[in-house]
Length: 386
Image 1: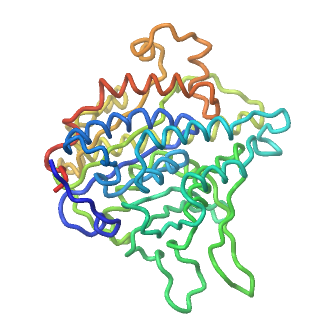
Image 2: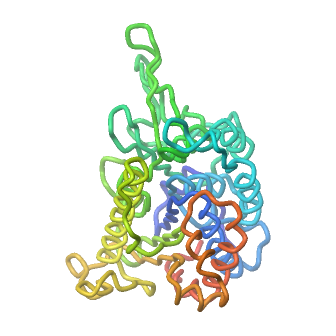
Image 3: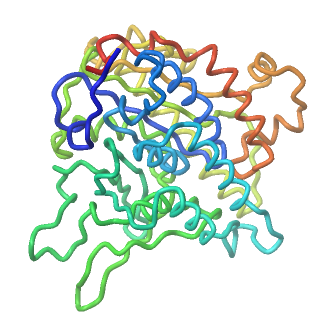
């Protein structure tokens, strides 16, 4: 079917059903996300006459990402194909994630943030800003400002309150933040990379103010689905999309979920990091629960023994959006169903966020899982491009 390619502003303002793509954080496990996205792109390309120039930026009106998901989200919003982004992502993983005896993440970050910055500038451009018209669709990057303790969802909605400063304002417009730096901030996972300092005000007492930003996964939105929904629909964000099963489609993609029953450790530094990761898992579980509670769709899974899938227990009994969630389970039975023969030792390492050696296997597992789970029916005709 033929379709019209919209500009960024048209994606935000054109009437009719809207589509959101939400991408989780998870370090180098972002390769899992790309595996699912390749299947999504292939199916949607088929839907649009097999057009080789079709991109996910043409279909989705808003692409939201946290941490590693923000790298992928920004690349997609710039009009990259999933294959282009996969090739760049694999190279980034190999070049940046070199383990060192001198970097243990306690007194010094594990990895060199300058290498990451150079890769992000190479992928996203060193001169592009969050407000650049080169971005072909809506983009939302989740980060957190540590010096104030506040989550910062940074988006390119041109009607946003902080998108453009007025004459006389001393704060810097969101549209002027360097795109690579916004993404770098979202990927600054504590102990893995140094925080990213972004100049947010030109003067106060004659000195510029710089906010210190860390990984958006340290907020409740490592899975940015709920934040993306709020961004698109709450009055304060000034987008105002309609809700409803035929009005809003949300596709959410994870980076793999492991076994929640790991043995705890009480070694001070390691235990603190494990507690943080556990809290992130709890937040992700809550976001997924809320998303299923508010929506209708074919991918709802059992949340737990009490709640089930929540498909018949929606808030107000009226779905706020149509929803699909794709994620890879690292449980032994699930992995065996995708690729028999994975050793216990390998399986144990698959949840690690900083192991480049796992990327090929993770991509293979995601490709197989995506082929069976990502289906055309998850993209109802009501959301076809005009």
